[in-house]
Image 1 (cartoon, one colour):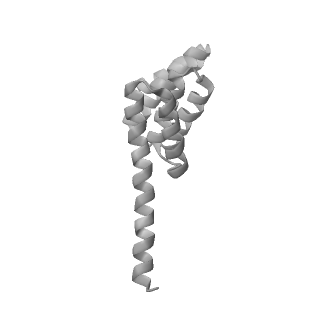
Image 2 (tube, one colour):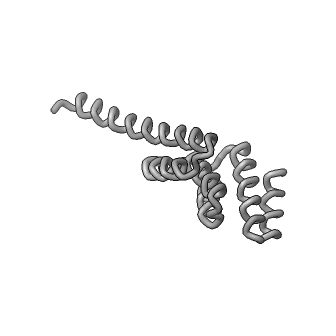
Length: 120
């Protein structure tokens, strides 16, 4: 096989996996907005496997776990989203959701601290 053909094949496979992950992330937000949180979780688990450093994947997964009452899983995934976030806008929204989850968990000091980070 020629080198050009091999490089083209690798590029196609790489772009296909990124496209598939983005499709799962888009599905997540669509399912979430429709109130189908179980399908949201399934789509985002696939996206996280394909794209393990995606802020959007972890954020949407954290939101879905919040809506299903799985607060510890929500916090875990929102913290992962925080770790990969580089934009202040993303961090502000992530901190808001994290703070709400800590509040639901009864950890009020931590909740207020995190929400204050969203305001700064």
